[in-house]
Amino acid sequence: MATRSARTDWTGGLEDGGGHVELLSSKAGRYDVSFPRRTSDDAQGTTSPEELIAAAHSSCYAMQLSALIAQAGGTPRSLDVLADVRLSPDPAGGFRISGITLTVRGEVDGMDADGFQAVAEDAKASCPVSKALTGTTVSLDAALI
Image (cartoon, rainbow, N blue to C red; front, top):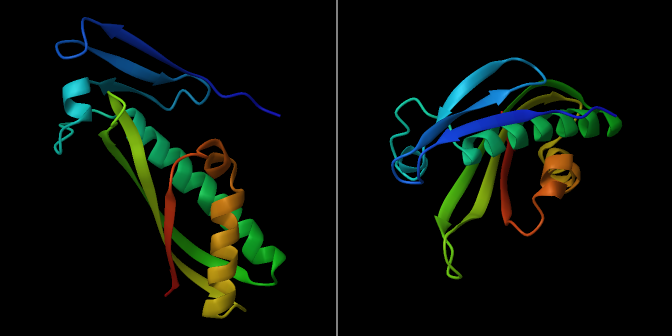
């Protein structure tokens, strides 16, 4: 199986420094990172580990859900998956990812709302990124459109 790589260069301290994260395997881009922007409501054009985790989780979940819908006899027409990753102070010190909310809206042929909910829950538990994030509470809001 494949290995994917990313690299970050960083200059300076936590509060006054900054860097860039580069997606090496895909060569899809190089993005600014900054701790003050990471913890701010306004990212001002920078990304963060939490945003990158959200991207990984939403795409992995969509792939897994489409596979499980097909295994259950449905046909996925479209899936719109949003992952919200929350960074919060850690009572033990520093910060932690305090939770992830997956929101999915699906247009699926051959599956009712109960069947969709069941495969959506199964995908939440079985996608590889969800498995990697054990120890983090992941909630799900799934519905057909």
